[in-house]
Image (cartoon, rainbow, N blue to C red; front, side, top):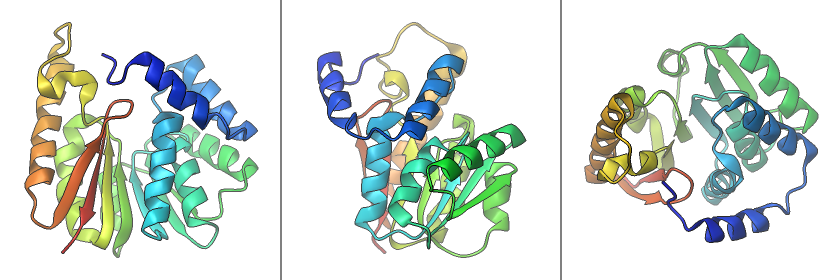
Length: 216
């Protein structure tokens, strides 16, 4: 389902088209040709803006694909930052480092060819941002792992938190797997919202991005 009226989405996309970086366009074309899920330009801009707004320098991505979201985070932290990417496919590591290198954004990148949670557990310290975009049945564990290792003033950001409207029971047609994941995502939304250490909201762009700021 369309979260925004398509005309409004087109207007926002037109504003976002001011960024004419050729590598970014290549990454978007790859996604379109191969049906590969990326956050898209509007959500990418949100990621960069949020990371910049808290002066983020250390970011962990749970689920990175070929580096599209890292493109935006890298612009925020700069070459002196530290971004950890995760994916199980070594081909995505090769693609990500190639794209980000050509864009001059690979300086802060550490790519882990491993499961997101395993790589997170193996990486020590606190983070300014933990970003999650893994298989949806892994969201509860990702949140449980991440929330204690985000600094006060840092953020947990997670994509697909409206899940095509299924969290609210308004999307058709029925689909056993997507409906089951919708219930999982709804549970995570409610858990995050109720956590007294965080203040959160869902940005209703694309498929919904939850932003949870740690306040204590």
